[in-house]
Length: 611
Image (cartoon, rainbow, N blue to C red; front, side, top):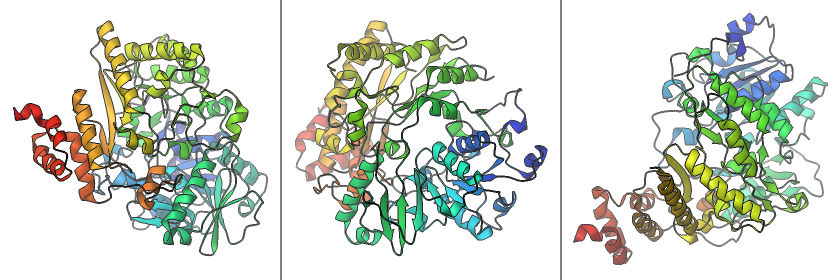
């Protein structure tokens, strides 16, 4: 439960009500933001970031968190019309993942809502909120952002409706969509509106998407198969995806155009990755780092999870097939300066309920801080979605030195007892043999430092599977690397007299994975003395390679056919192998392996019990 610091007043948060606006003496608002999440004034919450960015531009901004979309729409009316535009953010998660399990069962809680209360946002708030705003205020522009809209900007497979849906602007009447991290495009939009340009004329802002009846095509535009063609032919959807993913991972991307009915969806190329100065400017805005006082006495689980953590960079060059990070944040790492990070750590130390333990000093992948290409010219020509799969790029300067120095600086701050790494670690970056011996030495030092000083009892890593064929589809390294890392982890723990656990994450039913693959996984993890806890059934999410394989049945890069467990029964048949050690699963697993003709695996899994 949060306890506001005595130094903060209500006016230190962006206003959420008419009373709060009047208390500031404002007679109008420039921008009103609607968010599917509770309002937490923290750089991990998108609506707060955009609100603070707009405030820094001198605008009068208000936030309406989790508006009631039923009834008379009073939450959408209460603040009136803004001078410039409405902004809509569905929340920090895709609403459908937030609402439903991998088996499409309705979840009973919402981590981004006070006291986890469910039902505080609709399915697809990107569509629902904008439709309401356009119904009430048809003449006011609406700008759509957030991860839900970002990953649905073009034709995409929707797992929950089991069909291809068009780019979200076809269903959402927003005037403009901002994809990815929105600070730079929203700032450019505001500058041009304040300079007197008409909203409808703003068609060339990078990292935005808009609809048009006609488009003057340029020579280097990338024209995709139409939505209708993709609906009729899954192979065309697979081919489209390869182009979309490659363009989202290039430094100099092409404009993308896709037709849908009589409309054209136009995706402008993204901005270059943020500079250190730019990302610092975003994180250094005057966040209170606290939920709005209206939630006093209530718990917002998503906030509790990150309240004593610090995000040190954005982006991930892992390119995992099932992950949306690079599609939204990009593969190029944007790192904050040491000064900006230390400033945030010191602000956490001053929080009244801080006990001296940072829960995470990390990012999308904790140990990619300050990593980049040795030769920028090579990166400028590259369109590969991953810098480390199927092998680590020779141009990658994977140096852990800056991260080691940062950890030491943080640990020297008075009031810090321990700084833990809660984000995922890429152990393949630690175990790779680099040509530069300094990189090998830094990786060894980092591994030792991580295990001895920065593990909160349990270190979580994500091998995801044990079978190399499945790992190839996942764009993950060989399981042999995990086994190698485990030996190092166990050795260092023994040497240091530590009793820490290594907790691996695994996925079942990923495209390319069969029941036999899952049975082999069960045997291998049993022999390593794991009884798995952190497991997940694959959930198709828009704009990932794995989702395209799941829906189309093809690998978009090779066009080979890929087997995927699709029915509920097929998924459960795979998932059961995670829990081979539970008596209630033994009979079903035995029957499955008999059906597969793998009695050898029955013996390997249960031989101790059969003596």
